[in-house]
Length: 188
Image (cartoon, rainbow, N blue to C red; front, side):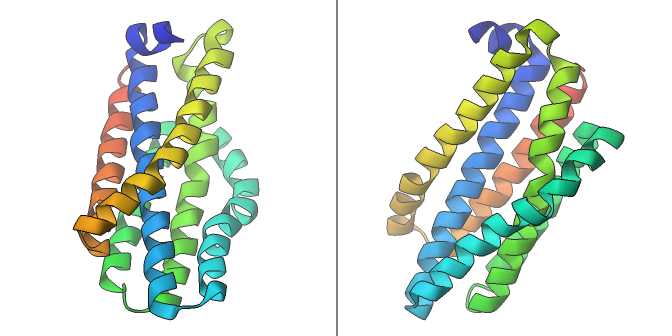
């Protein structure tokens, strides 16, 4: 697996994209669960945050795979990152409106639903068939690790900076991820 990162620059760029975007998503959802939960003092609202994040994967994910098969994969991924960046920017503006945030979380989840299928299909353009299982495994492992590491880091950040500032960090992760995707397309 180390060969993939060290010798395949296209895959390295895609791996860095996965790392940054998933880390940013983990920061955002943790901050919003905390922020909305603290503001509303309602377990139901916390549940709504998590539902709004996951529901688009079920609803949009069905179609995202077939769309990813027909369009340029790196373009779908970059579009997904910029769409999510825009949505997180709106989240900053509406931090005091829990229901608006819930809608924005749903929209961000819809944008994120396109990233995964496009990334999986794009891997076939970057990695040889014999290394594809390793590439998928490393990519999935990275996603899971960032999902695990992001929330505790968000918790520490909440001790020192405000929710809106953490969301700005997420905006930066989407921008970096789009840059990594663009760079990976140079090696495809």
